[in-house]
Image (tube, rainbow, N blue to C red):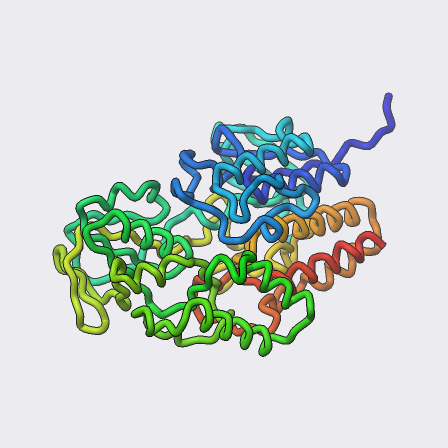
Length: 439
């Protein structure tokens, strides 16, 4: 009879970019991993055409290759600076093949329910009930189902008699042909869709609750995020980086009022960055008309807070997503003020055996940050499993999950910023834990 101890088991929910990173690192630390994916393929949001996907046909990344890729798996050199969603999916598939992840993924296997086997126990196992009725328990749980899948619709008085959809449903711009279109929402998706509406609709309007700074994708021939990272690498203070961003914007884009855009009510970096070179262009030539927030609907008429009104045929709400984990009770996620309160948005303050992957809204690409999240999580789990003293330091730190993840930036109060992190500072925090576990 073999005396080899049984490997501890990990359940990973979701085979998107975050679930793949979790699988890769827990496997490399000696765990037996089972990934449960509802769809019949990996990629999550990046698998265009799948029910879970929220990308549209023209979607490209808004962070360039170095800021998007996993640090241990560079993107191909022939990829453009801002890859198309089809290239990102191919990249994720190559990542899964490189690290032999596919054999650990159970496709078309949704999770119906997750519960701790013993509540209040930091080392509890987790009972997983699948949608097919099968059950199993695991030593560790990684939730990686994403937070950009459950559409958030704003509510306004009155009824709109035209066609309404959320950006989650938007795929191609032909829906705007021969229609008057209103796009609601000032995020990157809302701006992209407004630009497409400008090219295909009879008339396009763009409604936002506040004005934003629209940064170009390139600054002096370099991707904008790479220029920003260079300033961060030099260790320049926030006030100087803010001044530099203001000057660059003034030189390359100009004052918002010069193109007909409203002036923002905040400083640079205080809202999630909007990277769009074309929106000021189309506003400037009259193809997009900016509008403030909606106050009410009346048939085909939309009334705004500035007492103006327009008649439109179609509205696309690009108003973000709700944070939802339908398979687990919110009390098991330390849910407070509309979101889980977790240390570094990953580590549960009480449960050592529960992690959430990718629960961030960074001012950069996501894959690289999730790499460090899950490397730290796997190292912590291995330290707990092996009884290593290094686990105690993180255990004590995560007992108080409140932490400044904005590196001094005071984000505007909005649900949009519930998960916002300043990527340079956040990555450094994660890498510090990886370094401590490696000592």
